[in-house]
Amino acid sequence: MNDSAASPGSEPDAADTDEDAGPACVLVFNANDPSGAGGLSADAVAIASVGAHALPVVTGSYARDSAEIFEHFPFDEEAVTEQARAVLEDMAVQVIKVGFVGSPENLSAIAELTADYADVPVVAYMPNLSWWEEDQIDAYLDAFQELMLPQTTVLVGNHSTLWRWLLPDWSSQRSPSPRDIAKAAADKGAPYTLVTGILLPDQHVDNVLATPQTVLANARFELFEAQFTGAGDTLSAALAALLASGAELNEAVGEALTYLDQSLDGGFRPGMGHVLPDRMFWAQPEEDEDEDKDKDGAEGEEPPEADNDEGAVRH
Image 1 (cartoon, rainbow, N blue to C red):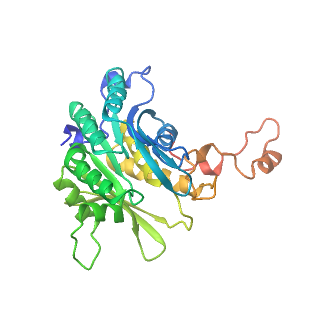
Image 2: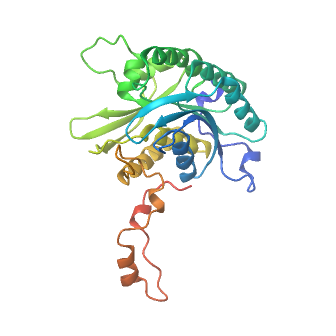
Image 3: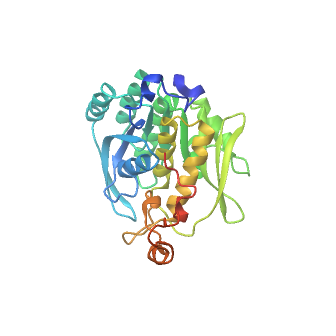
């Protein structure tokens, strides 16, 4: 287990807080996504949006549009390792984020790297892999359990995805609770699990940070009617960035979930497929900006603060 597991988000060393040090750095392993829905582009924008600096390691690339994934082309493990080591030997990395890396071989290489930097917390996101071939899914999930979970500090994933993966033999008539899923993850070495997308009967969803012993935090949000792509990468990247910046785990989870909710609320549909999160929602002009300027922008007066800045995560 990663030595940092007991206290993710603790204050960085004095050398890292020097005023010239700049934003905290997050090393990200993920695939390129040409649609911008998820993958490294989503990670980089979300991480920058909450005030950290992304160090993106390309593990492969999807061929996809805004509706579906057609294919994935993985890099070999040497290419992944060389990218990461070049950065790790040059920069101080506060948190590592692991997304979809394409192959068991890449998981093995990344697990070895994280073991070499055992004091750096690892946020690992498990996406829905139903687009992939069944034998590839099984091999990848088995490798993730065996190699990556022992190095993971916080596991992030949708309730149904984590249920099918970690509790395949679940036989109870009730759905597994976040603590049930967290126990299964902890048995493999991951001390904290953020379970998302738990459907509630009142058109809301719950998101729960849990350990086998207790629920540490939860946040409920209204269920959006639109079908989104990229929410999981957005959330896990924001969480990694907030932890890297020194936030405590409970605080970071709450802020990351709020950031995701606001990104989804401002979502847009650039193609013929799904809606994408607007990870830079706080930078968009207000629809009534011109009206506000006419009313309140007289010479010598400051314009009113934009409503959508309230609650936005800007560090």
